[in-house]
Picture 1 (cartoon, rainbow, N blue to C red):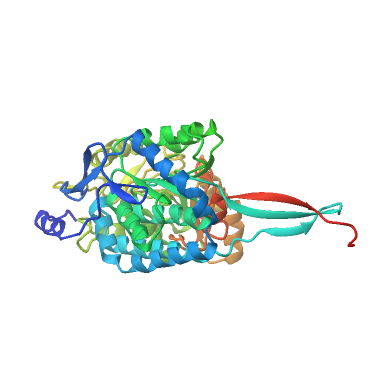
Picture 2 (cartoon, rainbow, N blue to C red; picture 1 turned 90 degrees about the vertical axis):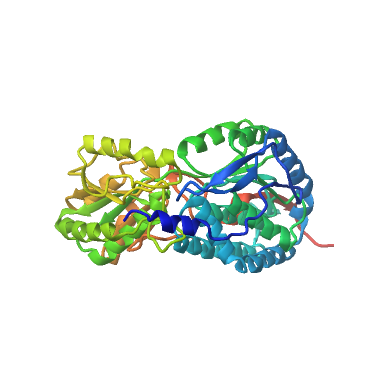
Length: 495
């Protein structure tokens, strides 16, 4: 339903204590070169102003990170862990502030912001616990005579670039791993959601992290920060979440200095419903997987691929649930919030035109919602068969597309017909069939009978154009460490 303007205005005026809008460099909040404003996508109202960082600020932040690196990297793992545990406890005390700021900046429903907060706190705790549990190895060489020792060391100062759609989760997942590994960091927030990153940085400051270990930059022009930093040999790692195009550019810039890269990029998630699936479960999970964050998620269900034997039942139930979704200001009790900007919302008309010209038929929604804010109706479009317009085209919008198929073989072929390889999903009651299907999906992650799968204990990442490396899980911390091999001669005889 369309948002009520009176309710929007009332919700937008809820008092929220914003953190500093300044830059955080070398342990202090400092002014930038002018400011830029942050607006609420639910009604266009002003959230606040933050400092604009230039390339000079970026290099000052790197100076601080480099100066702090040696001491931070040598700090006892348990000491680093203690600081992270302290930050975790402080973070828990500010759940409401984090959730409301996220909703004001990104527009997502408050319930989703609270869920993101809880997941983010889990990640911080996970990395705090991992800090003192990084293990090397000791072994005899293959031909004997000496020993092979492997020790893991922090990679060095890192550039962490976070997106707007999950503003807290992404900074915690990146910075948590970097700090736990013993790396210092320069964090660049998304210009749409800088206050969330600022509040997390304040938590780290209050927890007692040493000056220079974490530095935070906001900017209107991302390249003004990333380009000079990636030209500087002191940056040894870049971790980025965002579009494949930008990720490729950052990798190209970092290649000059052979900068280690972790990239979590675009997705084209196939959501496959086989003929023996629990339809009610598949429908419920498809709604969550597609319309969470108004479809603005790289792991969203981009293409719903359904066996023709169950398509009618699934589609009828799915459309009913989609039509029941409430749309409005995230501070109200709604299911779906706004698009992040007018540009994103206005571009959906052209997207739907392309889908229609490619053979798609709109079954629900399809229109922008009049009034304040950047709202669009939850939409369902059905295709008769595969579409070149859809394959390798991330919608990043509250638009679900349905593709009927004849059997599992056709489903797997359509699912894999994409340049992306991030998240995928399959629904079936047969566990053997599920594993066989999942193993054939050319994706880094597979949700089996579930549409949400992020967890601190799980390695998050994709293949092909969806990125390089993994965040979290058992191996996430090692993305920020270099293995050092030491060969030790051992005497044949003891005197």
